[in-house]
Each structure stands twice: as structure tokens, then as C-alpha cells.
Image (tube, one colour):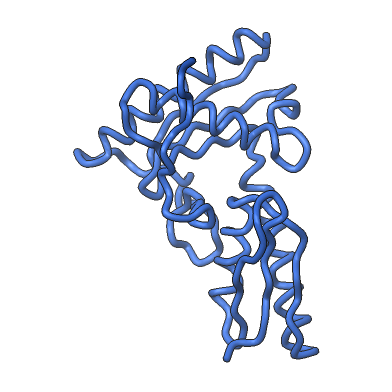
Length: 192
């Protein structure tokens, strides 16, 4: 039997980062793409391996999509755009998360190194990031108004990272994750 597990590329699941340049609004600067430097060649190679893997899956599923591979925010990124891709995102991004892990495994099998690859399909992550920013701001308002902690619904590592980023940018509040996957959630509370 073959061991298909991959070592964790992140120190914590909450370190799931989003490939954006620092613009203050969580949006990519000038298209969100960074040019490859000599140090990013390995990361770009990882995105190419993952893009080939995803392209093979799209062919098997008979889905049409354009695939971009790039390096952004110090991570390899693969973006898939096109129509009829909602099934690749799944409910609340569950299928997208699974595809991302499969793409990371494909990179690991070829390189022998774990990858922090970020996969996006149909712009789901950018849209979800905006929704989560609104959720985070709402929670912060409730905490400031009532002075009581607010527990948010369980979220994926990507979603928790987005919320933590918004909360940490605001004064007078702090956030932390509690619980165990898949019911790990964020608690927003007044800062000490």
C-alpha cells in the first residue's frame, strides 16, 4: 500500500494565507500578480505541476476552464476560470479545498517537498474573502457595542485566516481560533 500523506507545509492550519499584495483592502495590487524573481522559480515550478494536474482533472471531467499559474504572496497559485465550474467549488468551498490538497499532493509527489499551493476556481476565494470581511466587521461591531465575546460559525483554515486578518487590523479587539477541525471557529473578544 502506498502512503499518500503529505507533511504539513504550514506550522498551523490558520496560516493559510491569501495571495494579495498589501493594499490595505485585501485586494491584489494591479491584477494581484507578482513577477517571478530568481528565488521564486521553484514556486512557479510548483504552480506549473499543480496546473498540469488540475488540467488533467478538467479533461477527465470534460470541463472547460482557463488555467493560470503564478506566484503571489510568496506562494504558488493556480487559478481556474471559466463557465460551469461551480461543481469544482462545492458547498462552501469544500470541493475546492479537496482539489487544493490533491494538487498539493501532486506537487509533493514530483518534488518531494510540501507545497503551500493556493488553488482558486472561478474567483471563489476573492468573493468569499469579501464576504468574510463583512462577517468580521459585524462581529467587531457587536464586541465593541456589547463588550462580550462573539463566536463565529465553524470555518476552514482559509476562512479563519481571512477573518483573523480583518480583526487584527482593528483596534480594541482580538481574535483566536478554538475547537478542533472540522468545527474549529473564531472567537472575537475585546482586547486586554
